Length: 273
Image (tube, rainbow, N blue to C red):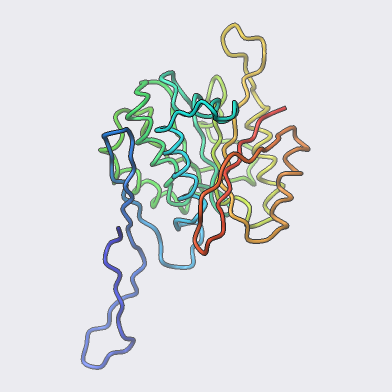
């Protein structure tokens, strides 16, 4: 569903001038359990601010996450089961969203959906969902989070908007203070601007490597899984997979969703080697 969209003639004589409609809100139905659903309201810009729109990859990735939460399959690959546990375990989870065109989450749709799902399935009081973008996107992100407060049962499932610039080497405190590293890093729409790949890869490498801790009695470093929603615009975007391998991250495609125009939205899971 969408809020009304205004169509008006330009310079109509005898009529008061109407300002350009700069925002629109859409409502998404999210099944959070077999017999339970919530409605997520997402506001986006109608202007040319590409980072403040809902894009196919975010919708497709959200759809895949909903199915992951609600469907248990004995034939699911081990890596998919691992992602299900990482996202929906009843234990505390620390999740970071890095998705959007140049810097971050934009409208925050993936984190909003994930927060609603975790509220229904994993009500731990500990943990966090951080959704990141540049400072210019904070008002929109914070509005969308506040508009959906009723879908989040506690602070750990309510997304938190955080300023994160891939070109800045120093992380904000909300990111650097995570004690046992993130369990999942979520990304959608990060591939359109290939010139941003060095900054994205450096950010990923720092999040994955810097401060890697040992979880409990397990002597192995605790590395996050990486969940990526991708819709191809140009084949050169797939160079991200090769660049990621240079820092020890290997991606495996685990699913698809049909996107606008019939082009698929691919779902990939990355693991740290």
